[in-house]
Image 1: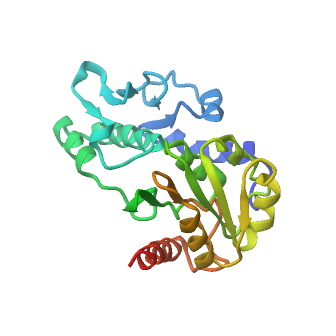
Image 2 (image 1 turned 30 degrees about the vertical axis):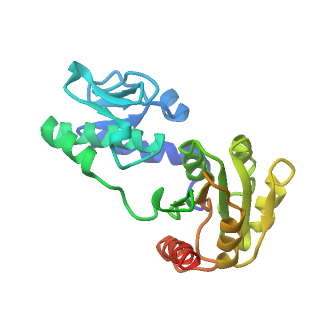
Length: 253
């Protein structure tokens, strides 16, 4: 918002890249894009996990393709989370457009293990799963992480907030056992969520992680998905993620 007068102005500027692109792929499941991008042109291609759009699509826990040349059970791949199904579909679509054959696309989907700090399920201890999603620096990315977890969650939020209202996190209150908040965002997060969810404020990151571990129960998930920038206590999200993993590993050593 430092550079544009409104979100519409930002969108109109960004969408100009379509003017000179050979292929344009967009997320049909995003209502904002769905309403504004008309996919009448054969080179403007929607992708979706809710409808059969584009060459690849998602149905009944499988990634499928037109003509059934690909059928991949999502339980057989390393990347977890419904948002990653969407990522896989668009990556496969791009690969197909540049001429990579279906066999290699399938192999890549099955063998790719994901990137560090991006919904990284790095370890389990005593029946508790630990997920490092330090790359989550806004509320929407934290919501995507929560959507991808079926068990009860101890959620660590905090850092430097990019938004003022965190109340959308309360949509997941049934699956959240507790939220631990740290850093400069603590007050904003607490004020947004504490009326509906058990929220505890702890200033320093290491103490917050220890409290999250102590609050976890068997079959629960400790999720670092901070929904904020890292720069109050770390140089970047990578340092924050590595610190999280190091604290967990030392705790159980």
